[in-house]
Amino acid sequence: MKQPLLPPATIGILGSGQLGRMLALAARAMGYRVHVYSPDPQSPTGQIADCEFVAAYDDLDAVRQFAQGVDVVTYEFENVPAATAVACREFASLHPGPHVLHVAQNRLREKQFFVSQGLPTAPFVGVSSLDDLLAGLAKIGTPAILKTASSGYDGKGQEKIVNRQLSIVNRQWEAINRQPAILEAFVEFEREVSVVAARGIDGAFAHYGLIHNDHANHILDVSQAPADVPPEVAEEAVEMARTVLEGLNVVGVLCVEFFLLANGRLLLNEIAPRPHNSGHLTIEACMTSQFEQQLRAVCGLPLGDARYHSPAAMANLLGDLWFPHAALRAPESPNWTAVLAHHPTIKLHLYGKTEARPGRKMGHITALAETAAAAAILVRQARGKLEREEG
Ligand code: AMP
Image 1 (cartoon, helix red, strand yellow):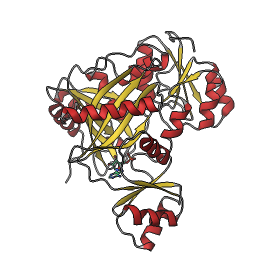
Image 2 (tube, rainbow, N blue to C red):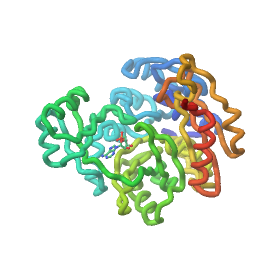
Image 3 (tube, rainbow, N blue to C red):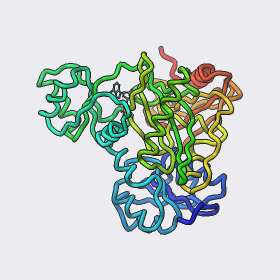
Image 4 (cartoon, protein in one colour):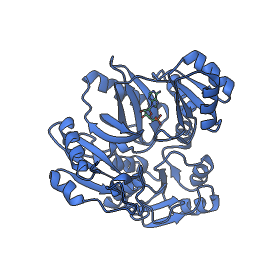
């Protein structure tokens, strides 16, 4: 790749959801061209891109055609098949590299990587048979969580095991379709936190500190930053994230998700080698958003200043909000005026998804305030204007 890649070069994005959309918006702002590749037409990213390729990820002829038209390829989801990544590299540079995908696509490899770097994680064992699972339970004890090694997200492909009775364990092994899996000790964490960080082609490192994440039904609900933790905990988390980005030689943005225990200990849960839902608040709160940072990193530009202008919070808007009354079958456009009227710092982001479905991420709102906790109250109250009135 010619260094650095300057506008109007063309950025290729694999995957066409909201993360690609916000990257494309950042790229457009800087005068880059954007091509996107995914199986979905009229996608959130395709609506912003100059060119939308609609084909299967394993259609390698189409992938090569896409890669020939771009200067660099990056991705907005980590389950890009290895062959697709390799085909892209025949014609364009790919950041982060295929080895990062290899590790991030598999929970067992991910955990083994943490161990190889001396990073703390919950006790785990690899599972490829019922016997492995029973032996793992004998070692780790209960409660434990059984997770498919690949393609699980937002709690999908996960079973919490509380009872070691053979018939029950067998049923849970069947529930994940006897796929290769990992068994982890269940962690009684105090909260979940993340570090979103970027690494440039020259090895420069930038980060957004520690972000505090609340989940609902295994899906991220509200993020707030900076997380209210002692400074040494935030510093330790950032150093662990740096170890991950350097250990994997990442060029781009990567998020590390942690469990924070009541005693202040951090355990790494998982990584995502791309911008992350918990980093959406950086669009309004920081000098350089996580999306601009990804763009700069993959283009070989200097990273931008990641400092915060203000504490902030973000609330996800799931498709459920389009169905405010129990009896409503057809979706109804939410009352965005009420949300924005709640407070003038509220910012609305909608991803252009044509169909609202319960649990589907349709957009998010961000608020700025004197403290992260105050911002979290604002986004919850503003979103509350849309929620179903019970009874
Ligand atoms: P994951 O897909 O690994 O991020 O898991 C989804 C959610 O399940 C996490 O955000 C946690 O809330 C919960 N979870 C995952 N692993 C564990 C664990 N070992 N102990 C306790 N809770 C967990």
